[in-house]
Image (cartoon, rainbow, N blue to C red; front, side, top):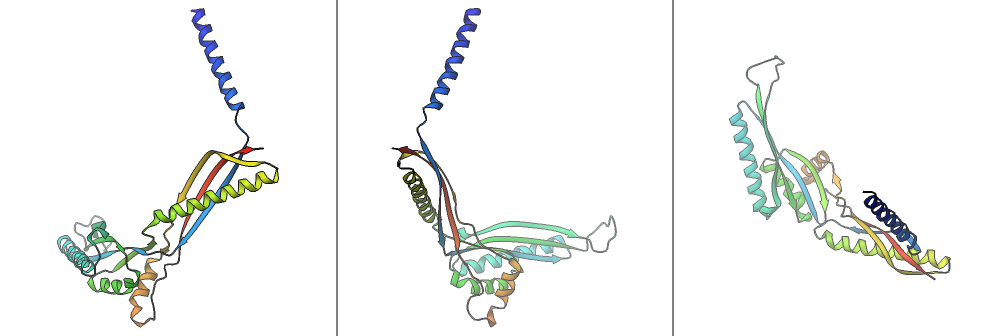
Length: 238
């Protein structure tokens, strides 16, 4: 028993010594952070919109919401929006009691909602599309976001800029100390794939409804910013 104990103890101590030795033989390193940024004009709009109806009975509310949703989808398809770019995102139907009578057996009316998310790939057609959607039955807009279709291309570009930025920093630091940058020892990277720029739903709805008397587009896409951050450790060479 004692022999086994001493063997295990020896193995443990040997392992500790090995770990310490490994930590002590790390090469001289320069650790830097690099940042890369790419600004891109968006080429798509993600539109969240839908219908809300009120009727005396549940069945009437359901039928009205279904009919309006079908008309909206039909209109979108006629305008060239692909079926894969139209997705129902939310639906509900619930009773409304307005009299304030606690425990009332039947509601005053029912509210039914159906919302959908649509990708609009032709920004120059957005105003005309929205005007037609209001005519087709849309009476609520929940959000507008801009995005870039080929985002991976810009992620790669931002990543390349971040790596070059890190190498430039490492070179500047080591040169000041009379040394040189060697091979990469470790690297970590995180990329923000482009933050969509929100447009307040109420403002978007009002602007588009007034677009008949306006000159030019009623929305501005601005820019989508794609950023990459890298942490790199280079070996220092004398």
